[in-house]
Length: 269
Length: 206
Image 1 (cartoon, one colour):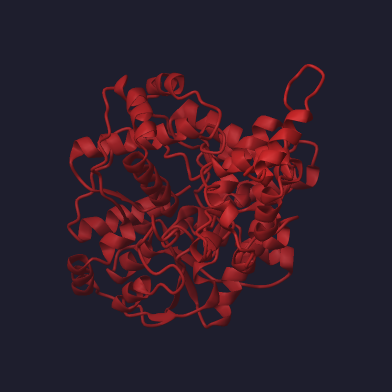
Image 2 (image 1 turned 30 degrees about the vertical axis):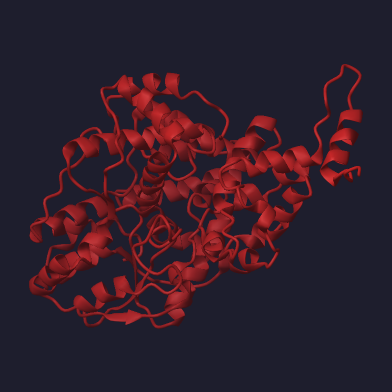
């Protein structure tokens, strides 16, 4: 479902000389509450398995998915602060030959792209200025909330992604919906609600002059892009707003072929 | 000088008096409040000042039967059944807007997760689709080690709802056309699943 995000991430990181080493046999982090609400301790152990493998690799853990970013960071916090849970989880991981010590640093891909060195490199590698694009940067929830766990930017008025947008030569768009929730898993369990929540974001961006929305989470992308047709027919409106991943926009500015960025997997574009 | 009996002591006596015939102490409203304060997310609920910042910023409030502010008040009043059978705890999208703004640092979304767990265990779930999501997600992750969304969507389908079946078939076709429908799941080595499950088989959020 997120192959386009995956393709574009790997493609641009290659151009930027960023070496990405995929965690071998990484498993599902538990997706915020998907497993946690049902089997809480198991869900912490699930996420911890990834942390333990990454810690052994002695590298920072980077994820392009905002939901995983939150889940893994929350797990990290729990394991660092709750010694009882940490020992229970490590007891479970011991059978697999793993142990998590709590030293891992977890970052969102966007944080890497916006670090000084990488941003400078991006500036240098831009071949095509995206001048005709008014890009509404969509932060969603977990890039910036809750602030004590996810601290990529200010939770109410974030601006870091706009910096990236301007580096690519495009115009930034300020709009009300930039940190509003798209509906997340309600897109699967209660479609009506997610349609309404996503509609608010898309219309807010459109009405502020955006001709493109950029996102950093594949579930947001699904609700805003793949379900855009459903929103249009449900509310009898026309939106027509392409939704891209930030990595795809960077790739386009680098002059990379759209197919290599997975753009054929966008419904609206 | 005799010390004045404090209200909670009086309650304790009243509660003790409300025993059933077989001598099991009946659960009181205060028991529920105490239980929630011990759940993740429930630590600060007694400090809620009912300011409404949570309800004001909530993007899914339009679909809730009780607002976030009301739910906290209801918990503090010990209204266990109403809280656990509400739509609120399931419709919350866990966006953390409320938790970010709360002047008392009530972690409402985490509390929602804890209450979902409690509602499942007490069999008070209002809309089974929502609770089934968790069950099916859990089953699929155990099977493949990762998620397989098409399978999850299929499992959640209500086969008696023809309209929804057609709608989802259309969505499936759209996703297939743009190459987003991966019918085959990516499976990793999953022998570790049963091993971890054995050691963490704890149903309750603590």
